[in-house]
Amino acid sequence: MKKLISLIFLIGLTSMLAFSQECTLYIPNQVGTELHYQITNAKGKVDGIYTQKMLSVKERGGETTFELLQTYMDPKDSNKILTQDTISFRCRDNVFYIDMEKYLNQKQMEGFKDMEVKITTDDLIYPPKLYPGLELNDGSISLEIGAGMMNMNMTTNIVNRKVEALEDVTTPAGTFTCYKVSEDVKSKMGFVNVQLHNVAWIVKDIGTIRSESYNKKGKLNSTTELIKIIR
Image (cartoon, rainbow, N blue to C red; front, side):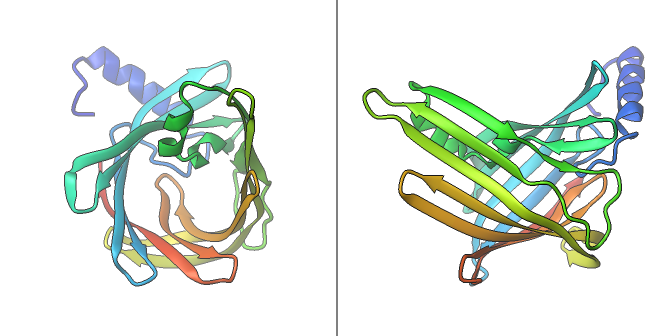
């Protein structure tokens, strides 16, 4: 919001935000908001830090789209950017959609930049009202990668999504009343299969407050926490 340079632009932006608020969002609801996250491993060591910043809200054809800039920094030097990419979300008929492309490993995707890549997605959705016991839709993303004589296929399926509970969660960013959502993530690349169980605590108009990832044996792999909000 600090970059606004005219009253006309401010009025236009306020109108777009007012429209978008008709949708129940699980991302920041104001342009310029920054979320700061910290990732720790099972032993509590900091493995990563990243930010998400709301860049834009656009309305077109009855659909509102949102873009966030996601930036991963070196945990040993927060001024050093490792990767940076834009992730998209959208809302239509008061249903919130999460672009499955956000599950792609951007660093890995850089290795395919000179290849022909076909991406097919079935996005995740959140209905207007969540409640404990609610089962959510599955999501998927598949890649067909043309690599000369040998093609590769990658798939990720998000299944068994369910709202488990409504709980209070406290992180360095504050205390929030969150929906606890669980899901299973199944990824396959060639003969390599990876299966994870994720649990996330989410809140309206912000997003993820805390998440935990477990391997197929139920052992904790990592924890991600919201540590700061800048509005």
